[in-house]
Length: 289
Image (cartoon, rainbow, N blue to C red):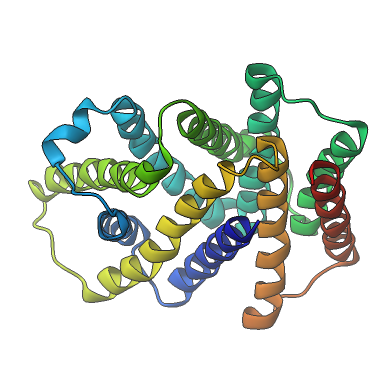
């Protein structure tokens, strides 16, 4: 459970850092690339065995980690675009509503049994994510506006499913740091390749502010995945319970950080969502404890 708490803290910090990017005019894409280099370095430093780079492609999980790296960079940029065009609340809802996908995957693939209390907790969790994030809007709604959050929803859900699958089937406990590092290394290589192609048209200038922002993002980003993978190794909780608690707690804690750090205003709906979040976590944790 302690690993899950640490994953929630790190994940919540990511949202705070993204918020600060807008405040300090950080170029998000370049900071994200730097973040992946830093996250990869963290994984290599934490790996207790000897790192033989030439052996990593022979690991059963290698190509999966490479695909995840590509998905990471795509989803991170989709999240940024959703936040900028539709608002942080929409991005948050799309990301955390995706918890339903790994829950259904766990039930279908691993025959995880969900008791009535757990089902009730998950349904309340979905409602909690919506109410905690929804904002009053007066603008005219367009159906086309659903495309970005829908892609974030699918991408985030598939990332969670993939992490759970590889952790259960291929990644030994001692390989969690190097597996995480490989995912981030793949994202970094893909991002650097993209930047290199762009630099052929316009020379790339190193921006110290973007680099510092990327470092600040990379450390909690790495540990959010590292501690989530460790939490998934906990046999006392099903993956459904872990993803439910993780995602709902992130919404709840991020909301509280927004109040404390950025003086964000909450509507009665938001407070109702936070209350539902607390109840859903207690229900799921109790039924799986």
